[in-house]
Image (tube, rainbow, N blue to C red; front, side):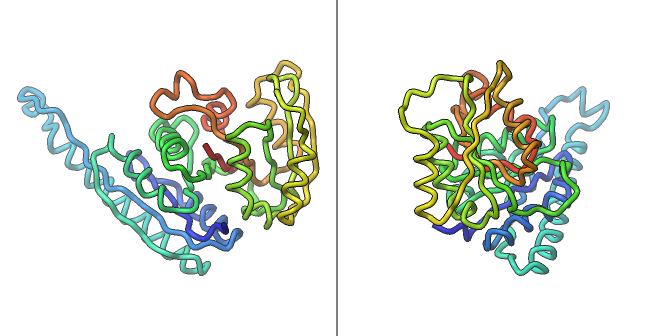
Amino acid sequence: MAVKDVLLALTTYPDPTPVSAVEEAIAFASAVGAQISAIACAVEIRAPGSFLADMVMDIQAMAAAESRKSATNAESLLTAFRDAAEKQGVFQDRILDRCLKPEVPELLVEYARLRDLTIVPLREGDNDEQGCAEAIIFGSGRPTLIIPQPRKRADAFALDTVLIAWDYSRPASRAVADALPILQKAKRVIVITITNEKAIDTPLSGAELAKYLARHGVQVVLDTVDAEGRAIGDVLRSCVASRNADLLVMGAYGHSRVRDFIMGGATKSMIAQPPLPIMLSH
């Protein structure tokens, strides 16, 4: 199925999503031939009631001011998104919703379930954005594209080189299937299999994946990399850099409700510090 309906999840509080992320999301939609919508949530900040605190600093008024700040950021972001997307001919819709701050991740999941793909900009060290990304990845049932902010590269987004992290697993297989329409538009696709990192209990090789993709018009280069005792996230970052990749496709391992306990090492590492746009499927 072609990627036609893309959703961009915007952050409004405490700091708004950078405009550069909006532009990169629009560039992605244009590259894959999709229309793009954006959702921004005006979050309501509620302060716990305290007579003493209200006497000293008026906590309720401060919370109301922060809520207004979020609403203002939401409107500004959606306006900037609409203008930029219309200019590129990919605008579909702008969505303004409202909820309490802790409810944002689940709200985004609900919208993401009815889209072909959801884009989540990620600033390193931003726990709120990372939490939203993880909720969407593991809760939406649809692929998620995370894009790092600030951008790691100066040139515009393109699909010149796409890397697939392939380990014969169910999540990796799902990711390849979800990414197929994107792979068909890429100029070059490289399949990376990392050895000496974990046991791969199958006699099949990357050549079988290459045959499958070839049946769908995607010619690939097979590449094997020895982990050599390095963490899987570090190996993937090295592969991305050495091959000048534009996009990484990989499966996501873990469960959102207990992610700190069982999230796969590679998944956790790449979400925490994405070196490039990464498309993840679970």
